[in-house]
Structure formats: C-alpha cells, structure tokens
Image (tube, rainbow, N blue to C red; front, side):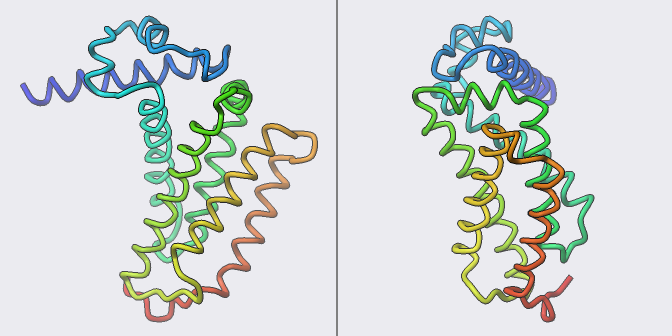
Length: 199
C-alpha cells in the first residue's frame, strides 16, 4: 500500500513539474497561479496544498528536483576526488537545461517579482556546492579558504553566468562559457589540498 502511495505522489510531482515547464514557456512566473498549475497538471488544488505552501515553495521543490538529477549524474560521471569537476558538471548541466528551456528562464527573469524565485535558485546552487565541499572536508581534504566562502563565491559566479547566458546570448556563447568555467575551476584547485583525503 505504501509503495502505491509513493508512486501516486511521484506521479503528482511529475505532473506538476511538467505543467510548470509548459506554462512558464509561455508566461511570466508572477502571472502563474496555483489554479492554472493544477489545471494543467490535472490535479486538485487540495492535492497541491497538501504538499506545497504556495508557488514559491513549489518552485524551490522544482529546482531541487532538477539539481538532484544533475547531482546523481555528476557523481556517476566525475571521479570521487573531482571536487571542481563535480561543480563544473553541475554548472554545465544547469546551463544546458536553461538553454534548452530558454523561454522558461526568460519568463522567470522578466517577472516583476523575479528576485524571490531567483534567490531560491541561487540558494539551491549554493547548498549543493557547500554540501559537496563539506563532504570532501570530512574525508580529509583541506581548503585554503573556508568552504562557506568558497561555496558563496562559486554559486554566485555560476548563477550570474547562467543568468547572463540567457539574457545576453550574443555575448555568452555556451561553448565558450564551458571552456572558461573549466579554466577558472582548474585555477581553484590551488586552494585545495587533497593529499590527505581518504577515498
């Protein structure tokens, strides 16, 4: 019975996420209503509010879902000691996703209340990077600067790069962004001592 319930919840989440992308490809985030989201997903409002407080709470969930997908892929695709390879992979997947759904991110950035959803996105990036740095620190890796400061620096730069690549695509070619981010993150290896890390 519990397995059926979990499956039902997963289907609800998928329907809402798919509906969210469909709607945000056409209109701004602040114009989106919970009613509209539920209608598109073909679920009841009561079901939505059983899981989420409001559309901002759902947006945070949506971003976490995407980041979790990227994290799972990053752990498979990057070496266990690849601290910055992991960060680069997450950055690349995020950029490519938003490039593929450019209208969606445009409609978030152009919203009158864009600060709140963008803050949510930035916070999720920061949380994922900091968690990864802390994990390596617990395994014996040492940093020349605090993981908290490093995570803030990286997440801020990644967030700004993603935003600019969408708002000014003529100035920020995706291929060039990937190449330059790789160079920047390689330079940051000098702030890290992995010689004592236990794998």
